[in-house]
Every structure is written in C-alpha cells, then in structure tokens.
Image (cartoon, rainbow, N blue to C red; front, side, top):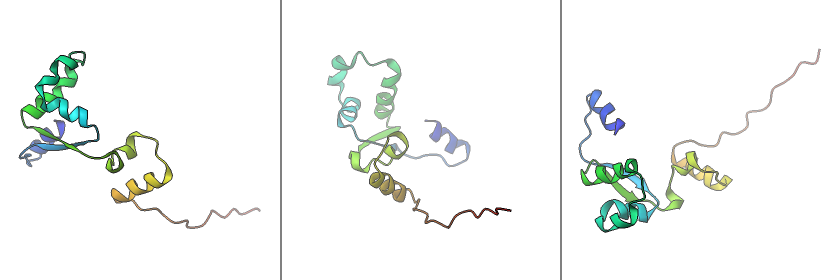
Length: 106
C-alpha cells in the first residue's frame, strides 16, 4: 500500500485495485473464499492483511503461471535459459563481449 500512498503524495492518485500477480491458486482462493477460514486459523494476523485488501478492493490477485512469473528473476535461482527469458521480458538484453583489458608489461 506504500505504492498507492507514494503516488497520492506525488499527485497521481491510484484509481481502482492494484493488480498483484501470483502463481499460487490456493493463495488466491483463500483471499476470496471465507469457507477457508477454519482451515487457515493458524496463519498469523499480518498475513490476513492481504485478504482484507482484496475485500476492500484495494488490490486484486490475478493468477500467473510459474513459467511467466517475472518476479522469480529476483527471488529464485534460475537456469540460464529462464534467467535470459526473464531478463528480456524486463527490457534487459544480453551484452556482447567488448574485448578485454590490455596490460602494459613494462
């Protein structure tokens, strides 16, 4: 919610819910279905904050398959192919070699 407050302070108030992309269908279902309450009582109060934000329509959880979860670039160890794919998705391209450093052996 700090993002919403920052935008408001900058004069660009956020309209509508902020979309949060998640690759866990069970986590999304827990925020939308009160029937899960009995099975989730062990979850600490601070984690129910997300559910509250969904109910208040301040955020909207959307499903994103694990192969498309760009946040994994910053949170998981990835193989080279997946790392390169996500780097390209965020606008970072592979830089070619520009040569080496020459040492003067005087």
